[in-house]
Length: 311
Length: 299
Image (spheres, each protein chain N blue to C red):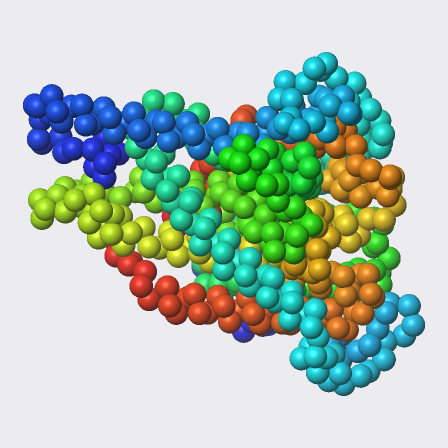
């Protein structure tokens, strides 16, 4: 911020023409970057300020806002639905993210073996990822249909009774976790690029030391891949923690709030119950949980990441 | 990258002399291809299910076990689905937003990315940090206050909330992507142009941008996909059915309080919404994959 002030003062000093070339260039750089700076102020800082103000108000958008002090924050601690939505989002993230990572890593490793038709397989595995969220949700609502859905065709084929995926509170969340495993394209492609960047000398050296396939995987592939794994964990976590459309479109949060994701709950409080102040308070919970969990990942995983320039 | 992968194959230095080893390698490859095929089958099965259901007579949808090849094939489902709701109007609406966003995002994020990558200005590292942090802020955290701000100035039921924000930097992710790409272009060219008296804007416009077609295509594809797929923002800001986007129209189609859901029509509409995305993906697959990789690996 000090940078902007100094440049503004230098503009005001009317000595712009006398500025050195590098200073003038710096000014141009700041000017080019100004849209983003303004964007951060208008679309991040300003709403952030509004959110702070809103947290202490009771407001349904119709009657004028009323200052209620800490009421919204206190209410957070006595809200069984908030607890439920945190639980749902937490369980979903805890299962979906590791499963996504492991499966996408396995897929990437398979795609890294030189066999015929690789580009076909890569495209086939990536394709589900680009299906629009709304179309994806509608398709899966039909796949998970109890009476005529594709999944129960499979369940029936192996001789098990049909499962009420979307009506049974015990099965709804697992069904959505399964659905999330269909769209693994992005982590898979990033893993694949990471795998292709591993220099072969390392494997040759490992082989001379008598390493088998498993040892090579643990001692060469995983350490070299760790920055990529770290990236995929963080982005996977942030995306999964914000799951909204699956809950909104397929299950409407049900049955018995078994798929009431945090984002969905916040949306309901804000735009169906019209409790803007309380919705803002829930948003803080979301930011705080995301931040704390991201920090936990950073500290527990970040220091295990192996960063060494390999050339 | 050599033709063989060292994780799974024998080292080239050990010639495959014995027939047994040769067979084990062949067997290994055969197993891998089989596994790849099985996975591909499961990945593509939902697509078959989607298309198959979209072409069925209504009563044929409700068969168990299902009929994979619809008999009769009913193409009229598509016509019915697309006229049941004014999908062509939704398409026009979506395309208006797409075009505005393409212009906003490509111009705005490339110029910000250019400054970040190629011009040393005070606080540049700080702002790069801001770009990374903004990328990670969940949309839902600022959803309510942003809505309140924009409803106050009368932007509900206009396309302004879906377009105007992108004129301000065009999204942190795209700035990041352009910055990463611009850094890989050698500085010699722009230095030479600078010596010849070329200004920064001309360097950006005449030298850097023409060299950055892959990055521009990547951002253009991402912008199309994001705008086309965007659901939560139109859901919040657009209530007027004549202004719906395709995604919102489709969600609304599903949510109609009719007696029961016409799955065949719904599948036809979903297929229609997916086709453009798949076409774009195939047209720009190379760039697309590059873009995903660029987002994940430090350039």
